[in-house]
Image (cartoon, rainbow, N blue to C red; front, side, top):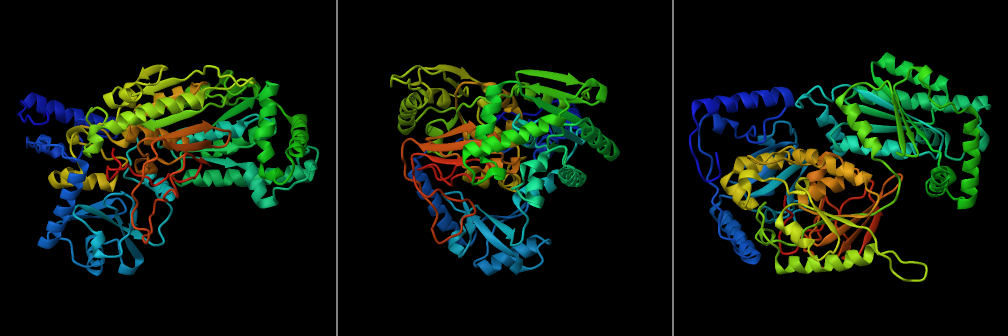
Length: 634
């Protein structure tokens, strides 16, 4: 069925459609993109879809006024339509009650899981700022509003995420069902933690539950960070026994986590002796888990010196000490480990990967033949530790942005063109290095854009090499392309409710989901990890959300809810333990915010500063929205 042109298909085509769906569900665990599960019945019953005729595009101000008038009219008629959400379930209510007390009772009636009206709070999305806050009066409720009941003692989003991923509602395809443990090997300051963190972030981004178990953190927690250097001497029986106990404790926690739904465990410790590695392999064999050892060997003195200064000098073990003294103490600790260090050899019979100088050379032995293992090896081949900035930005404001319409391929507005010019000037000053005599020298920068007009036009003033990549195109809204969210709620309320229930996995009719976008962005991630020069990516809201989620170490469930404002550059610099992040609002636009008396669940930025620098691991995104737009778009 093509949008706007309904026609019947012959019986052969219908059976091809049915067989296609059965094969996709059986082999891939999902429906094909052309047949989302919530519209499959309409296809099989030969029922025409709703004809999506694009409306005229009024100005954003006129449209907001019209929407406000519609809400007032609906409220006066007593026919206010709202959507109630509890956990991942959403239900539509055509006639909203007139009081918050009645609204809470309605939640209890609609969702049997809610036992008591006092055990939850009602949150609503602000009609323009698109952030969540606790509803305090019925005036907060508007036509087509999404209201969510949140349990007061609910677990954290990450805990819910891990629980959801191990629940029976997920369909395993067989590709990722096997549990696996990666055991890191190597002397201190050789990049083990860097490698483990990178692998963990990549696998979690791919929706594979992965966790790092760092034995050093167990030691600091149980025994204290301040240990005498002799504690790490292999000839110190007491210290060796204590370190072994910490390793066993971390190992027990890892297998306990794997038994509760975890998929990939990363055991981060030195593991420098053959006896220790055989002990770990024996334990993995007893648990029925495949063990793969990753040894990091560093032969470059410059890399070792850099790790000593930049990473270990800021370690909790040396907190409060001068950098020179910290480096000296840690260097002495490394020499003690070198006394007992035994590199992995073939005689041990282990499955292992050897990395030399973090990606300069790689050696493989006895690796299991699996799809996942191939992805990991290819990922490790692209790693390096050369610092370089990665710039992420959305395109300038487009005509569809101004009219609040999804998708499309519209051109830039006047404001969007101003941003394109400001971006060219800013990026030129930002990446141009300065010589010792104060003169500027040219810098290498590659600009990656999507193939859509608004992204390509945003890059037109930047005199650098450009690549236009289809993988960076905006999420495909399918039959909803050209519509506003209010029109979707009005004409396709089931689709509106399905999207609100699970925004990560919701697929637009004949379009894409966020999971689909993450899958097609995987080659982009490999290329970004491989790059050694600055890269500027000009793309779209959903695409930048997914890329930012990878570098910020966000779980996929957070990805659709990250705020990526227009006309703002996010500068990300990968570091050993996290990514350093800075934000620059080039046009210095004012940002509307919801009333200050309400409690927003998304932290708002305190001011319109030129840059906000912070480590991205665990830092929340700014609650900025697009000026004159009303809400961020997919």
